[in-house]
Amino acid sequence: MNTDTWLVVPLYNEGTVVGDVIRHARKTFSKIVCVDDGSADNSGEVAAQAGAVVVTHPVNLGQGAALQTGISYVLGDPEMKYVVTFDSDGQHRTEDAERMVQRLRTEDLDVVLGSRFLDAKVEAGFMKRIVLKAAVMFERITTRLKVTDTHNGLRAFSRSAAEQIQIRQNRMAHGSEILQEIARHNLRYAEEPVHIIYTDYSRAKGQSLWNSVNILNELFLDR
Amino acid sequence: MGDQIVIKVVLIAALIVLMAILLVPRKGARPLAIRRLTYLLLLVAAIAAVIYPSWLTWLAALVGVGRGTDLLLYGLVVVFISHSMTSKSRHAESDRRFTALARRIAIDDAEPAAEAGRRLAESQ
Image (cartoon, rainbow over all chains, first blue to last red; front, side, top):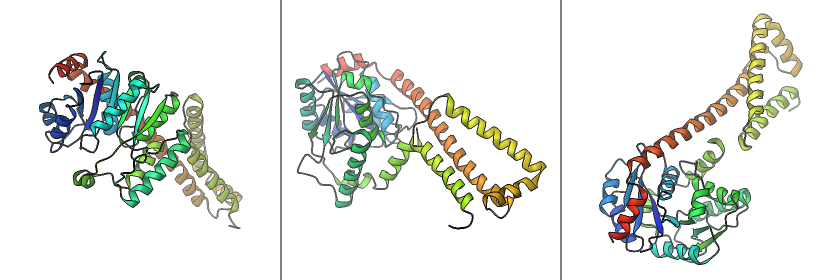
């Protein structure tokens, strides 16, 4: 199914959940690459058994680096027309991803970004919502893109967008960087409402609000 | 404010310049050359201060600081911050190279994407 599309799944110490996530996603997308970012557990093995191709970073580099590695890897498949970035912890839904790819196929778009806030079903807490909204304000000012959700890992790119976008922010600031790249290359983009499943698992490991400070630091200091 | 107004203005201006450098992308030959000239001037000033310590006191009095040693300390703080920023950005640059190398190794070690794609498309 969807053999013109590759799912890129960054993977870091998710051995307990990634097997189910991959098996489920493979029902919709045949081609999945997991980028094992130097996991200490058996994540890579589990992902390979579940039916994904695994590309392994020799050392831990960060989620942004893993995304870029996955994108560079799938560009090696001449049949690839679309790339979807998808989280390994089960918080994204394959039906959302499929709808986003379908929009790339039928509309004049290079990038479709998943957004939590176009959808009524937001499960994020009050503080998290405030911080996410602040991030959106920041992005709107710095990139002039009219987006409603800047740190959503579910994104779909056309092949040409995947070729143009370069993620240099290895760690957490890649969300902002992808938007900057979209603006820089004048890519045609749209947002698609998606539903994020905040499980106890993802909440437990989830992004601390302090990370927004770290992201700003990376954006300005690590250039 | 009031007293020591000159040194306050000088120090705040220096720190604001450092903040500007932080927020505005910097690349190319000119910033590098400016940085090198600054270091050169600093060295010359250091030599002068060793030979004639009284100059430092004179300069301190001129900008409204009590002693030459205080002025030296202020200068040191500004130079230290600017040095930390430079070395951080150089560190980021070497990180980028390291990432490119690791990425190449990761992709070269993996099953080629075209083959993997065919295999996965069939194995469903």
